[in-house]
Image (tube, rainbow, N blue to C red; front, side, top):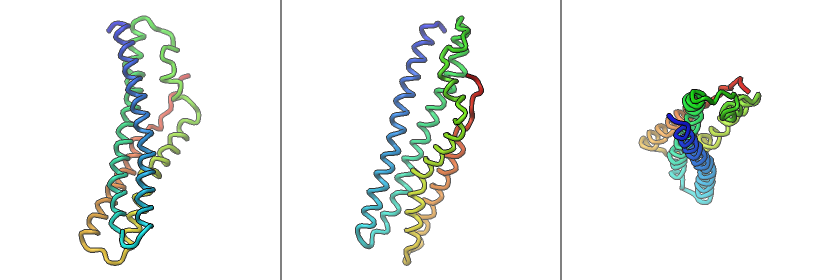
Length: 177
């Protein structure tokens, strides 16, 4: 590939990364607003236990969308570091500072701690409200078989989402920079 093509590819990838970051980050606000609205509606009146089945579904969909976007953001960074940067260096760009930010921001000594905290925040934002809603729902006295089955399936979805947040969290740290 020529330098110009590599430059355009890098610019487009960074544009996509920025768009995905904005979209991903807004999903947290949507999840918090959804949770707040549903709990406010539930606690505002009696006999509304079924609304507690909304958060595990709705917020899990938002959480999964957040997670997929986060993974794509990381994939773009990996691609730039492992494919595009070596291609640029193959075209005579031998400086270690060529696209240095792509590695530099991953070498911060607090990166691993920050990523662990972020995984915890993600789980709190996208999974804990669902777990609380299901706990309240299951504490109701007269649940039928279908309610138990639906609630249990939603609980399983929340557990899988927690596992996915942990599995896909990138706790690695680059030692360069």
